[in-house]
Amino acid sequence: MNRVVITGMGMITALGWDLPTVWRRLLAGDNGIGLIRSFDASAYPCKVAAEVTRIDGSEETERDSYRDNYPTESGIRSIPGKCCRCGVQLFLKAAKEAYTDSGLDHFDMEPTAMGVASGASVTYIDHDSVLEHSRLRTEDGRSVDLRRFAECGIQSPHSFWRRLGDMMAVVPAKVLHLAGPTIVTDTACAASSHAIGEAFRLVRRGTVKAMIAGGASALVAPIGILYFAVLGALSRNPDPHQASRPFDRDRDGFVMGEGGGAVVLEDLGHAQARGAKIYAEVAGFASTMSAHNLTDPSPDGAIESATMQLALRDGSIPLEELDYIAAHGTSTPKNDATETAAIKKAFGNRARGLMVSSNKGQIGHTIAGAGVCNVITAAKAIQEHFAPPTMHYSNADADCDLDYVPNVSRSADIRVALANAFAFGGQNAVVALRALPV
Image (cartoon, rainbow, N blue to C red; front, side):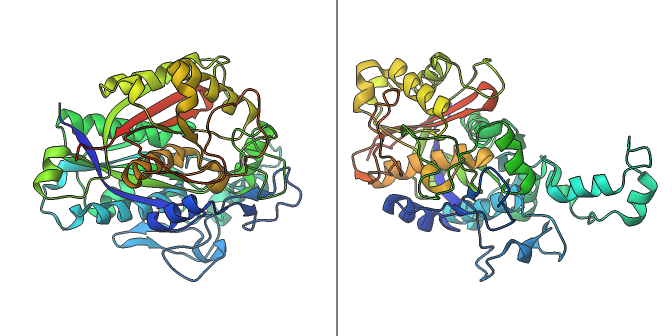
């Protein structure tokens, strides 16, 4: 089997529109969470989010400037109208950054030798659709009046691509002229990690030379906030500096975040032959299903624990070599306690010596983009020998008693790292990364 390395990365979050900016601000402990600006959330139980507020370097800061966008050969075209930005648009931005960063955009390679894999969370109903559906009901109220919908429906003919999950991979492949495999995974908060895992396997088998993999979400919208609020998953704390506090005793739910990222996975021999920059090796991947219930993790963390062990085993990495975990760390009471229990179960006495941190106190929970954000965090931690902090951590919890790198980033020799993604429904994915020998 081929060895697989990361040769390009791109990231877009509430902290910035490119990876260097996001990473610098992560290490500095900056906060990307604020009061929701894209709609009036005064009547909503959750009033904060980590919103992306700029598009392609423009000076526009309001969502109205890029509503109802759709892809073209050169990127994204804007149509004045309605509807919010989508995960496709954000993933395309990250994919273009990663592709350029890798240097493959100027490398002569067969188009079929590189593809795209993306995690998706775009198949949701937006607020405008709900209003339109209500407005165009038949007289008896039991169905939509299709004639009236055809005559006066407000949907743009270009709006439906945003609701098709396959567009998450198709759009970047089209824009970047890549003709290799396209894969889309829709596994909630683990979607981009599963996309990376499937891309990793394609490169390791030699099916392709490289893949762009990752994902993104943009669910900060009235319906998106309501869905997760009804589930009881969102923080009710109105203070942007206190709402998302992973592993803290007073955590009460996650904060929705927009954004995600992309990595270029490449065959090691191919990367070395062209003199590519290498961030880290993707050594192993594991995916499991806890099958507990639709929202909560397994009660004792046993399956999550096994997933971390399986990822290291897949990469032939001894458990004792692990240095750092980019945790899922959502800031929900059950998730954080379960992940802590899983780490202790997997690594025993070594657990308390591991550095564990969550970026969700700064960028919120990016849903389909959460996994790739952790993979990028782990790769940068290995490359730059720095563990980013877990922000807004102030009160110790008896159930969360590990080293969470609280509030201040830390210089450390990190050689092996895990990137966790433990999603709704028990859909687990863990990526194992390690530094290449000098």
